[in-house]
Image (cartoon, rainbow, N blue to C red; front, side, top):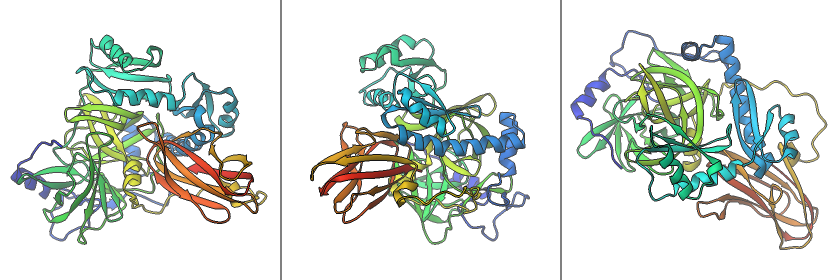
Length: 509
């Protein structure tokens, strides 16, 4: 892994003026910038006023408009994840168009399910799984033109978008077609941006990585139990880290960059206390209440010590970005500006954690675009638990309903089936699979009386094979929970003994 070294003396001097780190305790004797530090949160569900101010400046939204947009994004994130599982192979992606959640489907029969969830169905030719398969062909290509800087799936146009420098449109199209992507499924976006990782100064709060006898500086992302997450290019596995005060902090235990992600985890020692806040560098600490993933079109804000807090819109997900160090897949593209030193820092949609700054182009004077690594990917990959305030607003009381026939009926996606011979198996949903964001898969299998049915959750790997990632066996009904990365999944119901009809309930959250 390549990185830019930073002189030890310069790094230490920069650290002495840092604000109190959001994952770290205040230390007596540290210098202050004269402003007080406070947690910018009221009762559960409130939005920090600093974020509302930034959204007004960057997005032109007043307080009520900003709150409404963030609430809509949180709702849309949950609904789109459920619809992806519910519509299975017909799902073509989801995005917010203003305040309207649009969901693409390939089968007109799925439109009623989309409408029932409060979204607007859009009939398309290609499913998200088909477009992701086309994108994977480009990810697996041995080489790409120098003027191609990235590619991603765009649900709104139902196409694979290749990003290229001016004058390279024809080469980009030919390259995509040579690698097996149909010409009517791809389009080229021209951009002069040349993305690069933003390594070399602090993002939210600084920490230092021991590299080759010197130190490199990066930024803390979000607190998790036992440490914090950050960008993967900010330290190889086994690297020792020190904090803003130049005291021993921890060890990089997990790091991916370049390749399938730009994510890392640092385990801290007992002198450091992870806290559920983000430093806004104006004397306040912004609360982190959860990690509901916002959809394309949602408003998002980031914090960074170089430029402060800026906001914008999520433009694309699962983008492959070509950095000088190599291509990175699975990043989220935004129109938020950033500069060197904002790398590794946290991204929020309201009080919901989204990801960590990876890289970008431009600056906060002329504007630009920035990519972040989705947070839920590293939580799932390393079985980490985000540290939160626990103050998220309680949902409104539900109307009284008849008791569910079984615990499985409470899950939003329902599928029924019947197995006529012991030893047989069925895939769900409906003999196919479904796309899922990173998150928790929950399932419940109601088996017929006197029979023994087992349940397995499988994920499609890069070789086109389904592999079991979780299973529930034994007597009686089955429940299953699994924290997984984004990808294509299916459930398999196996009649170990006996036959009959079963019910399967599941969801992704």
